Image (cartoon, rainbow, N blue to C red; front, side, top):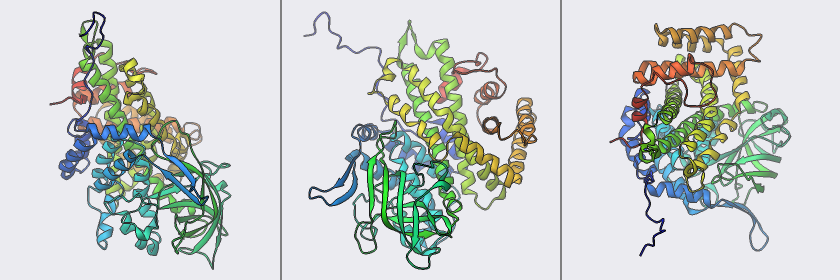
Length: 557
């Protein structure tokens, strides 16, 4: 019997946000997929949305981060093992994403002897990847690298012929055995070293050819990597100094004779977030590897992998932002404060609507970029991809941490505790703005495009000009960017100003053309023409905030 001081009657607390379809409850995602050419993918994405939004999937994500990977350098008898042990929940997440083809679906046509890329392959995959990240973000690291390695391997056909059939398998095989004995493989990456970090040309790891050397030839590699991503992958793309300069190599975990390649895992990184996924320091004690491409062209060779992973960084950040927004709105719709639902409190309405605008913009921009990957033979799409990949990655990944922090605040103390998913999301989001190039690296990449391929910027700017139509606000923002482009002497100092300006202008033009008027008008007014601000919940006094929040609610019927 409950006593007079019992607190076990739980009132005024929202029900758990689980068993929700992450696709059908997300209007912005559905529209982005359909708009960018993925209409045919709607049915499978809805099915995957049920899987990734289930209580079971969210619990697997929690467990994978609760029970961290562990390094085992030796077996009980002293033999080197250099393996990482994961909780079964991590493997369950990997199985889910591999079964959906997130690690390889855009290359499935290669397994049947060629053919062309399906017209919506990257957009459809982006829709699923957006949701898989919400299920659990850390496992997406080996997923994205495995997907992104394929165009690099294709540069060396004899190596591609050996590895791609097992990459495109819809199976997941976690066994630590030679690739020849596996039904499926994953691929990792090691680029940075202690002394260089982003400046990979400062790498000191040495690659000595076994014979004459050259593309596809065998080398012995000695050195280290400061970050080896997903160290239980079956092979890695690594950069090392060959006699002809920095070169790209494929380094498998096992030697051709079936013995273990001497990659010595030193320790696992203790990271802020991305905890379910292992990242390690490694030493190469004379490891066997094969060259991909010519000596001295390592950066040019591996850049295609980097480009694909940057797309995934933007898609993943948009997905995590969406989940944070969903938690905030869900909480506000059920919580009563000062005799009114929190979602009806004027200040909270401003904040939630403001958060929703950034999620709309980020999602629109990320999926517009995904479409440019599908239109590989279209010169205008290629220009968008070249210029807007670093711009999209910069902006979407940069705004994510502040957005998740604000969403956490919407839940108050309920959001700050470890039991709430918001704490994990908050730790997770910074990695995407750091991995595959920090903000300054993205800005420098944009400046390189302007210098080497100015026609790409011309194509993008003309498309944005046409999309602006006669809207004075968009026209003014466009002219501002044009003026920056005509001041090349100052661009090295104004790189971030240019990148952020282009990102918000591009997002605004997409929303202007396709989103409901309350979304487009509020985004343009606050992101392009609004007064200076540093926090959310400002400048929406004249916006239709109710329409914005209703559209973003995860509790849509």
